[in-house]
Amino acid sequence: MKRVLTIIILLFVSEIAFSQKPSLSFTYPTLPTYGKILNDFIPKDWNLLDTISGDLNKDNLEDAAIIVEYKDSVVESRRAVWRDQKLQTKPRILLLVLKVVDHYELKVQQNEMLLRENEGDDTYPDDPYESMEIIKGVLHLNFRWGVRGGGQAMHYIIRYQSNDFYLIGYTFESGYHSSVTTSDFNFSTKKYINYGYDDERGRGGQYSEYKIKKNLPPNSLKKLTELKEPGTWKVIDNETI
Image (cartoon, rainbow, N blue to C red; front, side):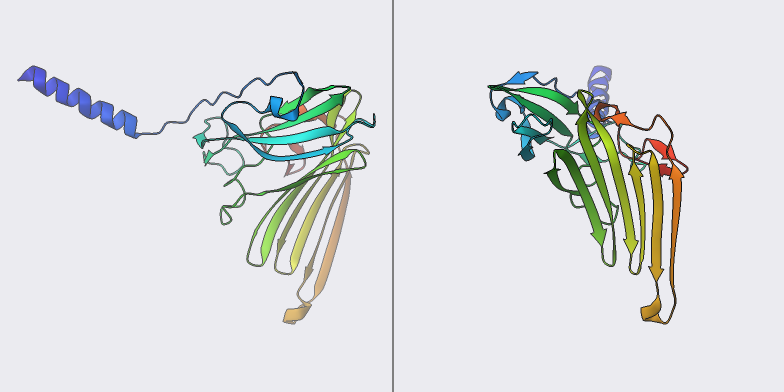
């Protein structure tokens, strides 16, 4: 009887343990350094989310920026800063590959900086990822989310220089009804501008605006591979990227 009771207790404890979902230590794949075609860089169990082609290193060859997404949602124990909570999300990787004659070479594998679905505003659970663009050899990454009367946007500017990819610019915009604030970072010139306006004239109020200019720290130019989860890099004052 005691043996049967012990087995029942063990089964009950096991059922509780398996019903709980602990934070997972997710392991990212190590991608190949070379590939004949772009699909060679998409790992097993990952799906292509977006891709764009263009000359990123000014050699007149078509390079590529690729975003892949894991097939399943996971909970990462280390990823909780952006919204102060651990969310069930699908990991994403940003790949930057350069065309070299008859093949491609992987220059950057960025596992952390991309916002994922459900990582926008708490009241806007849709996917904050908007688009990628290559403008005059510079990569632009755009994220946007919003609700009625308001929204937020993040804009990364990435350039190939000194044989690597660097974050040379970043803009964060936030608006609600008639109020808009913008923080603009130029890491090449080390300049920071925070400006905004509040237009209440349509409601019988007044119009007001402000602009604050500062110099960024001298070591603020970072390689793309140095960026971590959004909200973890305190750049200046209370501004984070």
